[in-house]
Each structure stands twice: as C-alpha cells, then as structure tokens.
Length: 118
Image (cartoon, rainbow, N blue to C red; front, side, top):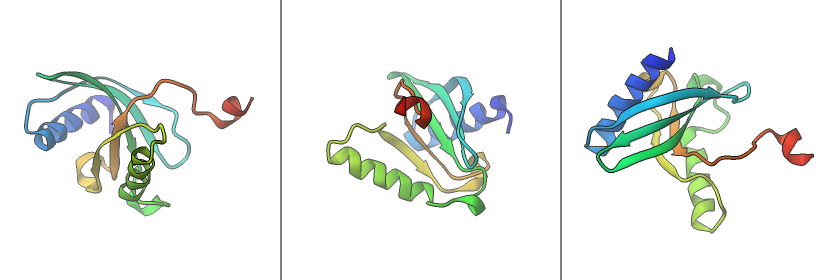
C-alpha cells in the first residue's frame, strides 16, 4: 500500500474508532526488520496532534505473535511501570490496512540492537 493510500485508510479508521475527525499527515516508513512494516505519522484532531507509530504485520500468515498479544504484553509492562510506548489502538482486521496492526506513541531513540549494545 502506498503512503498516500495508507494515510487515507488510517485517517478513516481512526476517525471511526475515536468518533471524531482525525487527519493523518507526515507519514514516513521506518526500518522494521523482515516481518513488519513500521511507519511514523502525526494524527491531528480538534484536541491537538499526536505523534504515533504504526506497527503492522503485512500478512497474518507470517505472524509469530498476533498483534493483540504483543500489544497486551506491552500494556501489561506499562501497567507494571516499565517505560514502553503506550498502545492506543489494536486492529486484527487485515482489510483495514492490508495486515493486522497496532498504533502506539512514538518514542524518540535508537532501536537497532547492535547500535544500542555498543
């Protein structure tokens, strides 16, 4: 899915989920490894702008852990005081964006293991 199609689909889905008009802009793809598509974007509504991260598995057939399970583990960690990106939404319906996904708060920093370990 092209970035322009992805931002339109995300905006429509977020508008439906939140019950208010949400605009998506500034979508850019980030490195994600072999099984994921990651993208960063701004979601703007009347309440302001949030910087969010999309984590999507391009096909449920290649999931090792379903996105709902991964999101639940992250939320459990957050509830226990572990600093993790907050999960805002989870969607297992591949028809929305082309694969199951979740949206979380963007946290600036480095996530490439070999760089972190140096």
